[in-house]
Length: 201
Image 1 (tube, one colour):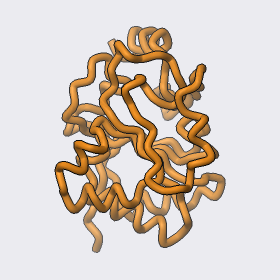
Image 2 (image 1 turned 180 degrees about the horizontal axis):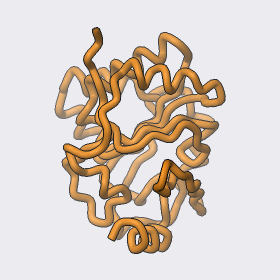
Image 3 (image 1 turned 90 degrees about the vertical axis):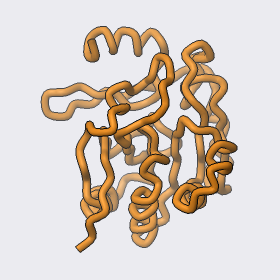
């Protein structure tokens, strides 16, 4: 029996606000960064969220025939690199999914770690958005939180879509799960302030 699992903050079966095409979105639980003005503060706790077994996630994602790939964020995805690799490898046996991943680490920091699980995860990623969120550098540009964050193609898959990143305007989708309201996308400062005042505090 496969016991590997991922600690998940949130899932969204279909979104168009986190990269090109329709995507399945995963926000992992747990983060060791302390970014001022964090876009997802509830995902920081190492003990929060919900545990999903890898086969359960594999089925949930592969059953959606409308998506081109996955966007993975957090929390900090590289804290669960080993089991995230298992999920991605399982999915790629089923379909040629594209993988976009947001991390608070820079690519240089990840390479310096020279960790086998991290290196394997980097090989599985098509597009990496790296670096800590810096509220002082939040310029409202699309698909990344602040101007210090780099958009790094790790394969040629999304090379023709890089012009979607870092342009004026941000898209947000609202969605409902049971009795809670969630959003998908990279919010602007005004939206985030209003959201936190109504739903976080």
